[in-house]
Image (cartoon, rainbow, N blue to C red):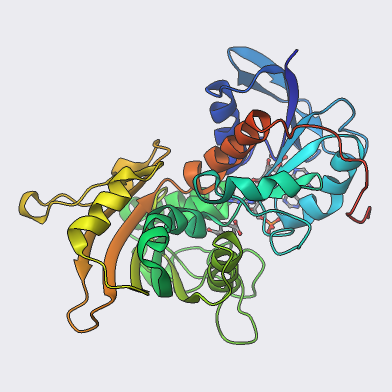
Length: 358
Ligand code: 25A
Ligand code: L14
């Protein structure tokens, strides 16, 4: 007997990759159900060569579902994930809505799979930028400890969804084919769909991802701070982030500066990263080898390179970390969580509902 797996937001940038990851998954799957908003209901998408009719997401859509993967934005998860749990499913949620809830484990399987054991029906998949940074830094934390992290991201537009991809491609077309100057390109989504002003991303770099918080950091930046502490189970790690959108379609890059607790030698740091599951060391300056977004697309691993000592701080190390934001940053990490739940015997209905039905 296999599972019935549902994808909520199946037509989106992440949802379509979830379909692909399920096709390639080791999970025993009997049936896949594709859910989206009412606009997509009735259309079809293929799964393993078979056309599946998309259904509207409703409170009663989860009967008979064992595993539900959510990626249709925070408000959709807030509304429907508790109904999925009530119906006996285990939810893997890719949005930020439940990530800081103490009843919800926040999981990168290579780093903290053990934290799933205490689940209450919802497991959260971290933010894409946090996930790939965890894969690069956990092997270092394990051996030398982590005192602080200062990270600047170079994030692809696909993180903001299918509409943001279309907006970027449209702007490139307007500029190159119609000769529109960059400042006059048409923008209505980026930097952030929910904010008041919109700026072109083509030929640009925007130091805003998600809306601003009270301390002048954006939510995306505060997610990196708060999620790192929760995943690494250490509130004393200092984390400050600057998150920047660049005109790349897929593949997030990050310049990461860390200070370790103990002094670490660079060859041993490289070895520790090369040995860590899910990490690939790409670091040979003499051959101009370092991670690139275009090479990471379509891959599940996180690529790490440019590893070098800070010129002044003896415990300071710099590196460049790249991954496919739609795969390890979202769809693959979610399906990998589902595979780990299965391997640990944790796919089962939850008896006590800890989440509010709205
Ligand atoms: O809601 P948020 O929090 O602001 O999230 C913004 C977007 O971020 C993406 C996803 O975009 C989401 O919509 N996203 C979410 N989590 C992400 C993550 N972790 C993430 N991206 C990266 N990493 P997307 O375009 O890739 O995916 C959209 C999918 O979500 C489905 N959807 C939207 N609302 C839904 C819903 N499904 C069920 N119930 C809902 N209430 C959406 O379904 C798509 O699958 P769709 O294909 O039917 O939508 C077709 C187009 O119409 C837009 N749209 C949908 N509902 C509305 C709408 N537009 C205006 N008003 C609406 N009520 C969709 O954006 C889509 O373009
Ligand atoms: O919190 O716009 O997981 O690139 C990740 C993608 C938030 C939006 C999350 C983007 C989302 C972000």
